[in-house]
Image (cartoon, rainbow, N blue to C red; front, top):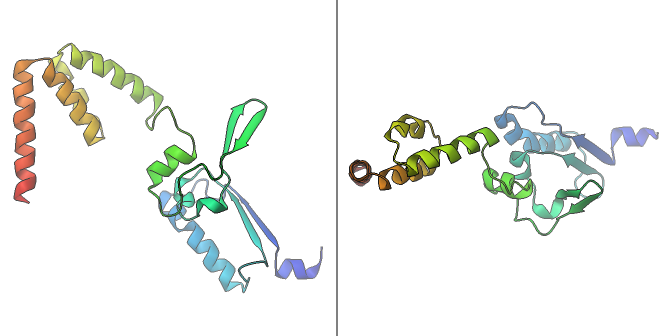
Length: 176
């Protein structure tokens, strides 16, 4: 090892350095890293390269896609790089980045919640009015509205109540 390499590293490798960080710390990570490198008088450009591996869409939102490799496992023996095929990651919505960059084709909710929603859908289609409390547990407003409307369509009285509630919500928004 040359002593000059210690003072001015050529390659910095950070393997999932953000693991265990609170999301706010992840949000600050790239900026803090760059501030640190600048404070150490490490010059940008050809003097060093930083290689970061991550599963964090928050970190990815600070890095342009042209500086990323997006690796996808095809089978046990094949991994491909989809660089250039992924939407821009820099300053992108972290949920979209998570879905697209980490190849979440099967959805953005847990498998258990997914199975509960499928069962809830059947109950709503069958007009089971006892599911109102289950519907209120859903954290996504649009999903909640979907299940409310599905339940309402299966029952005339429930449909009237549902649409009256929707009208009330619209009137409240109009008053704001």
